[in-house]
Image (tube, rainbow, N blue to C red):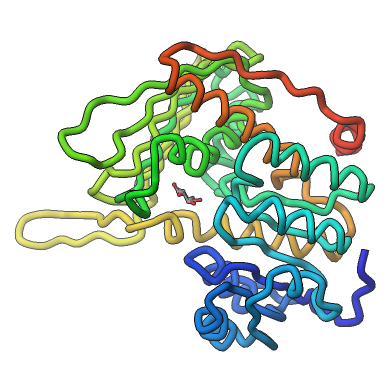
Length: 346
Ligand code: ISE
């Protein structure tokens, strides 16, 4: 663990795309006690532009060098999914705390390698960016299921709609691993259990856009969870959830920030992506990360590397189910003693 010489946590933001830029702005603008020390991106001009915007000390293009810098206390990884494993391993080797955007890594085998390295480091350094755990609506949903308000929870419904896929390269399998990983994690968090099986289907679209993936999952706790992940919804960014219990249900829709009353009509616009919808969640998540760094105690609400691995295990099974057209058992991974001890201590 590096010895910090500055009062503020000096953060390296690795990746200056949509999420790196957003995280850099949050750290620079909304989190007292943390500063963006360096912004790193393969595109040096983009790194410099974000660094200048958030008042960072420096811009860089070499992620491994940025991670190793002696003036960097902590690292936020916001690069494309396939780069997460190598960069997370480098942060662990440097003994620095890491907030890694979801998914933790490309697949369960890559996640397992990160788990092994974190256990070898002997301290929980990784927090995974499943920020919905900090979203007020999901926090209330989890409480409604845990405190008996709804009676025994039975079913969790999930809609996850993006306006459009990020590119022609985005596939149904990526919709599962990159987008629906949020639902795999938040359902585990809300219900306090793991998944035991998954079935996946797609309807037929009239065009070449990626059709929604519909999944039904069973949990070890006897619940059913359904997920619609739709990366070509067209009308707006829209995430909804409902938890149904034996005595009632808890639901939420799109938070209404604005309403237009015009020409005999009242309309409430949808955001175009997740940043406005989960603005509070990202800020709560990032503040919790910095607070955990300062206290030396991992945040119990946040997703750990183990949670990142569990989401990847479900994602791999959901992809297998989509390809086979069959219901697939979700492997029940053995939890290494390192993570069991962390869970028992929480
Ligand atoms: C994106 O990477 C995110 O993490 C968003 O929260 C999610 O809604 C979107 O589907 C993902 O592609």
